[in-house]
Amino acid sequence: MSRLWVPVALLSGVGVTLILSEFRWFARRPIDERLQPYVPGGWQRPVRHGVLSVGTFREVIRPLAGAVGDLIGQLFGLRDDLSTRLERVHSPIDAGALRVRQFGRAVAVMLAGATLVTAVGAPFTLSILVVIGGPLLTFLVIEQQVISASNRWQRRVFLELPVVSEQIGMLLSAGFSLGMALERVSQRSNGACARDLQRVGRRVRQGLSESEALREWADLVDVPAVHRLVGVLSLNRDTGDLGRLISEEARSVRREVHRQLIVQIDRRAQQVWIPVTVSTLLPGTLLLAVPFLQAMRLFGA
Image 1 (spheres, rainbow, N blue to C red):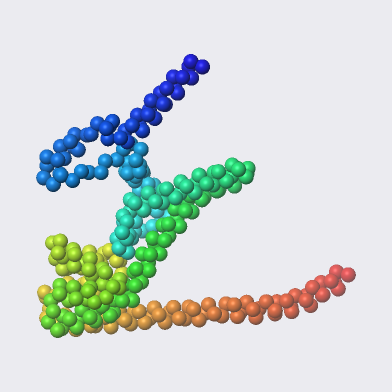
Image 2 (cartoon, rainbow, N blue to C red):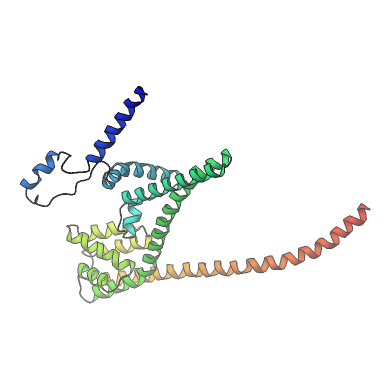
């Protein structure tokens, strides 16, 4: 019994130390916090996290969750990284926070699955499938939600681009500068292109040129029509008839949207015939099967 008290005392001491570290009167403040009031702008007291606090746990698990999530994404062939997709859809959370959320939900599903298979007494193969497949499925579901949101945003930008291009062309033909035209279009609606152009305006105010900010938008949204439009807008200082070029590009994008719409309508029209064909072939198959079975019975006798 005396030997057992040694590890119990050690664990108790570590536990008490971790608990007391949450209190400011016990834990010694680090030197950067003690010097904070004496630097410019250091009058605000920073938020300090203890050893067991949620902030510290997130800081520790964030790099691990990001590395594991990126590895799983590469294994499943994801071309864009998570930060690009989140920035594309104007998500309020960053990639690290989403990876931590994925990691937490996957761990919760794994613990729930392990508890379930232990209580039920499932076979080994089914237990491995539930304990490993459940967290992986949870991770992939969240990843698929982000991918679907990114694809929907790209589709919205592509569908709104003809109207936005025509508006920019009319404003340039009316005498507006390129920066004023982009600012005017971004304030006239709350669509996908308008929100993207608001970000372009912010990047211009941060010091980028209009061409660089537009090229950054085209690389982020990754839509071929946007790349072509940005290429035309980049000729702002080299040509005086930019409105006509933008109008031609808008008509080209509108024709492309029209072609994709026709393809989608034809595809849905073909899908309508699938249940009709099945409902027609099934009775015919039954009518052919009856005499065939009858002939097999007669020859078998």
